[in-house]
Length: 270
Image (cartoon, rainbow, N blue to C red; front, top):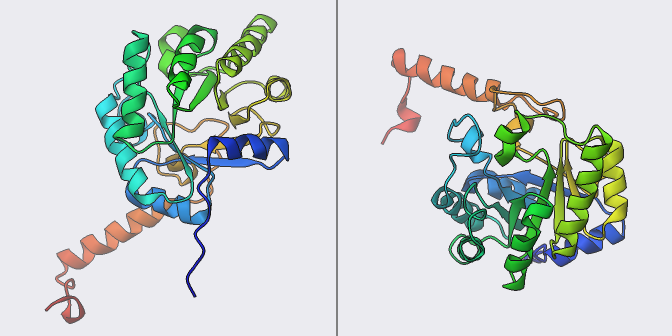
């Protein structure tokens, strides 16, 4: 019997999920093998994050990541994913300079990369950009709170919205991005109560990362939940498996057998 192929997730589905109270699950992926596993598991959103700069390329932060690198990772993910919504981060300087450049770069991530939506960091300051990209029929996911591309202004990776002025600003940012036409909004590293209030205030789904349980969905970096990133460990990350120790064991066993002349044996030779 032929298996029935499940329907592809769309940004329209995300809003419907919010309406009926169904949680949205998202994870990052940067290559074919990981994306394939996630898609087969039923993940709703595969985010091709510029976090690849930190967990794949070894950069100190996301700022060095280029558009060409994001296109490369997005194409790899798109080859694997059949059901999930593919969202790709627009990297630093790919949308901040001019609207025409932002529109062109967003279009390239869809046309050449195979993404279904792009993600942009910022609030009121990028509302015009969100509107311009949406106007060319490219769905946009917003991102406020701790925005990694703004770490120099923020003084590092710090929780945002603890005091009233910051909280008020984030609420205005959420409303501005929503009114500009965004399809969903990532809330990163903000107090849970504020995230709850924003989620109740806006019509589009909120996807939390370090923003509490009341968001409409959650996203994490896959290398973090698998224990594959030893550079940092944010409070909001839950490690679900220690994959690093499993990989090390496999490497150790291979190294030992090669050194001892055990591998390859007859079963692995022609």
